[in-house]
Image 1 (tube, rainbow, N blue to C red):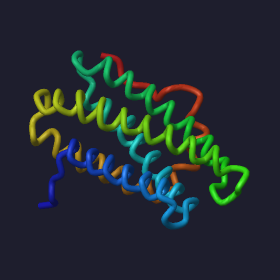
Image 2 (tube, rainbow, N blue to C red; image 1 turned 90 degrees about the vertical axis):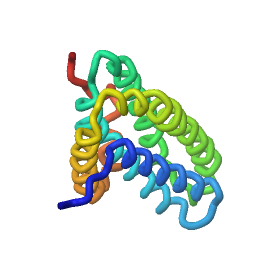
Image 3 (tube, rainbow, N blue to C red; image 1 turned 180 degrees about the horizontal axis):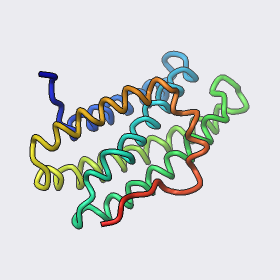
Length: 170
């Protein structure tokens, strides 16, 4: 039988990966343009799986407001990514703006992932969903993430900045 991964653990590990990439970009170690492309792809794929699989599965009376706030936070993050995609961190004219937007992205991602999701939503979902439900959801989220990440999902972000992703109604 395939290994089962709890969806909350999976999403938290993706948050950790994103934090590490942001730190690498901020430290100036390595090719910032390549690191940002990787970061943008991971954030775009992560948002996609949350919006299409995780949030609809987590929609309950107790989570509805949090999930609607979460897709609004995703929208703000996507707008920043779209702006950053237009900048070249190697171009001296773009460097200050790039660094300022990366700093803002770091703040928004940290607030969304660490405070809202890990701090409020995930503990609630541990009480609302069984281990088996979280494991099944984890495998579904992982499978979709692996498909989406191959398609350079950052390229779709600019077309996703008009409005927040739709969520199912209760």
